[in-house]
Image (cartoon, rainbow, N blue to C red; front, side):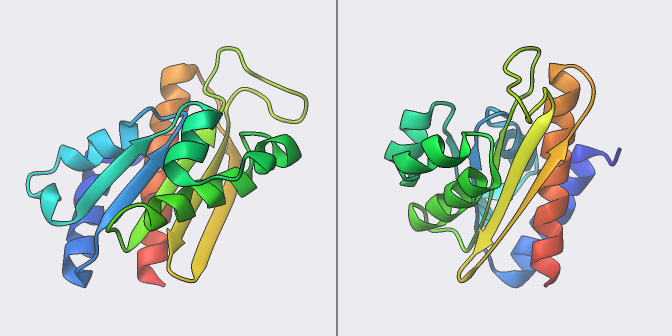
Length: 160
């Protein structure tokens, strides 16, 4: 797995070169993406803010995720990840955002969504991309893989 610090540095260089600000909306990573980003000196030039929205209520209150989406799709869904990423854009000064929502374990699995299931969202104006992956390993491994994948997805969107 690529080094998270190296990914964060690459994200920072790319955002700074494009003059863009990033916002994060995190659930299962509990701020891990924002922490990785702010490990980089000078990140205040390209990182606007991070939302840690662990509860559904906070996702609705802070990110404007419609409450009906939880009942319709479940908290760990691409629909929620998209709404979180779009909400981070709408409630910040950022130009691009990413989101994470998942089941890091060891409990929390539901039918069709085993431990390690994570949904991602990346958004910029007029374009949102989502993914659903299942990672293996313990809670820390799932969270670490999630942070790395969120940063890689952000880099892919920045290259579009």
